[in-house]
Length: 209
Image (cartoon, rainbow, N blue to C red; front, side, top):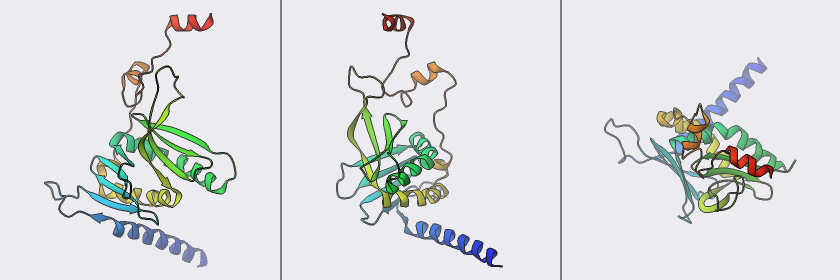
């Protein structure tokens, strides 16, 4: 009986958390599509309530309320890439908080946007990068276009992703790029935003000299 009660208690706790997240979502009643479905939802993250999510059928945008220039937008493709990486990003965020090992994580989610978690900076950063002329892939530099989430904001974002997907099936069903050949990957401006070309035979020969 004790085991069953514990399971019921855990399920109740999870249900309560989902209900709390759902009730905290602010629905803009004036933003409805022709079928009367929700088309815009906003939600504030973290203790400071400074990071605001704006969710629509085809994008998720996170903006700083105090510094409006700090923002990042996930298209359906970038959102799908981001959601697929959530367990890995969260593991690095946990290691960062525990300070149990060095953390240096960065992953491309499309169109030059990267998710980064680095030791010494207690946040999860989502930011656009660029590749200066003359530098190689892996030497990208950050731009000012992006936003950093404190760990409490990150945890709250994780908790409401299922709610977002429940409200917006188009985001839940969004798929990341999938290329069956190298030419397809190289031609994709989302996967290959810096227009990096594969080595040609002449390049390989020059490297051997």
